[in-house]
Length: 206
Image (cartoon, rainbow, N blue to C red; front, side, top):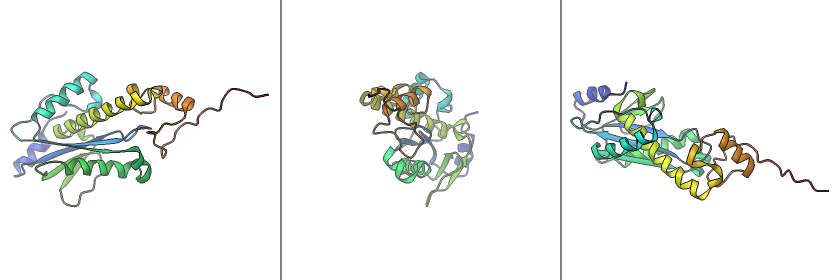
């Protein structure tokens, strides 16, 4: 159940700025990985939050706007497919999270990270498996990251309409895999991921 009990414990310990951090886009075959960092004030939390994957598009968009209205600070990190291919997806995810946190003002005193991994040289943090289904701040970050990345993929769809990015957002759906087989990878596909081979032309030459 998503609530602010973890944050409440930290606030009661004397901290003021507790930040939830989550990412979207680790698994897709194309596009960037996006991370978000969200800080709520103790007396200005938001009800109705949930893991972004459990929400409809309309629900995510509505909550996205409400989070921007209520949050004290929001940071977003976007790491391109080129960097993902250069340093691997785990390192790129960490980089996106670090970039998102670096944008916050004031800087947080404690981070709540969705998942088992994080690194921080100066801010204490807690990693939480399924944190986006537990912590309100992390759930908010998951929504911001998801909506931000989905909007980016919709824009990419305008440039590469044959791949259907507007629908699958770069994930390896049958539709997407079939398009890659037919057209080959485009500029935003991650070359370090397993991509299907383009079919050879069926045209025969005598």
